[in-house]
Length: 445
Image (cartoon, rainbow, N blue to C red):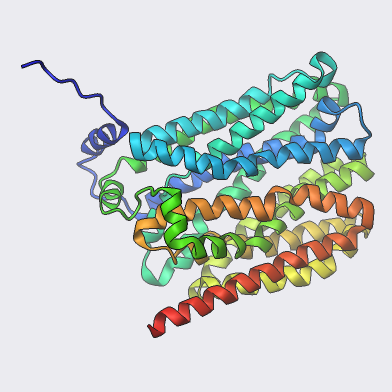
C-alpha cells in the first residue's frame, strides 16, 4: 500500500504548539489582555502612521498638482480605501481561517499589514513617476485594509469569555487601549522627526522612518498573539464552535439584524474617533502650518487623557451595563458637537480644550464600543459577527469622516462639522433603542 502523506495545516501546527505549552496551567485573563493590547497597539500604530502622513506628507508628495486643500481631500479619499477593503478582507481571510487555520490567517494578515505599511516608505513621489505613485499608494492602502480585517484573532472575544461576570465592562475596555497607545507611538515618532529635521529633509526622507518601524512592531505583535492562540483554552473554545469562523452568507442570513444594529450602534464613537485625531490636525495644518508640531504634542497629551477615560468607561459600564454606557456617551458626543465648532475657532487655547475634552469623551465611548452589541450574537456566529460588525462600523462611521468633516468645514464652516457629529449621535441612540427593544422581546418569549 502506498504511503499517504498529509500536508500539515495551521490547525495541526496550533495543536503542536499547545502541546509545547501543556505545562502551563491555563491562560489567565491578565495574560490574554497583554496579548490583546499588544495586537491592537500594532494595528492602530499602522493606522495612525498612515493617517498622520495623510495630512503632513501625502498632499505635497502625491498631489502636488492641486492646491493644498484639494490635496488633503484627495489624500483622505485614498485614506478611505482601507475601510472599503475591510469587509472584503473579512470574506477572504475567513475562507483562509476555515481552510488552513487561525495561525496561517493571522500570520498572513500581519505580514501583509506590516509589509503594506513598510512598502509606503519606499514609494516615489508624483514628481518622480507621475500618476503611478498615486496608484501605488492606493494599492498599499487597500493592502492595509485587507490585512486589518484578517488580523481579527478573536482574542477580544476570548478575553470577554474569561472575564468575571461582574467585570465584563472592565475587560471589554482592555482591547480598546490599543488605540491611544498606537496613536501615541505614531504621533510621537512624527513629532520627533518634524522637530528634529527641516521641512525639506522631513518631506524627502524623515517621514519614512515611522513606516519602517511598522514591520518590526507587527512581527512582535504576531508572536505575542500566536502565543495565546496556541493555548489549550483557545483551542477548546475553537473546538466548541464558540470562536469558529462562519461563512458571511450564513451569518447575514441568520443574524443580519444584529449585524446592522452592531454596525450603527457605535457610529457616533467612530465618527468622533477621527474628528478628535485626524480632522483637527488637518484643519490646523491647513490654516496654521507652523502650529502642526505643537498640535501633535497636544494630541499626545490628549491620548493620555483617552487612556484614563477608557479605563473609567470599564468601571462605569460594570455599574450601568455596556449598552447604557454607550448611550450615555452618545449623549455626551451630541453635547460636544454643539461646543466643538466654537472651540476649534477659539485659537490655541480653544483647540487644546477641543482635544482634551474630545479625547475624554471619546475614551468613555470607545472603551465600550466593541462589545456593547456584539454580545447579542449566538455562539455559532460570535467570532465572525464581531469581526464583520467592526468592519462595517469603521466603514460607516470612520472611513469617510476626515473627508466629510474637512469638506463640510471648508465649504460650509465649522458648525457643519458639529451637525455631522450630532447626526452620528442620533444614529447611535436609534440603533441602541432598537437593540434594547429586541432584547426585551426576546426576554418575553
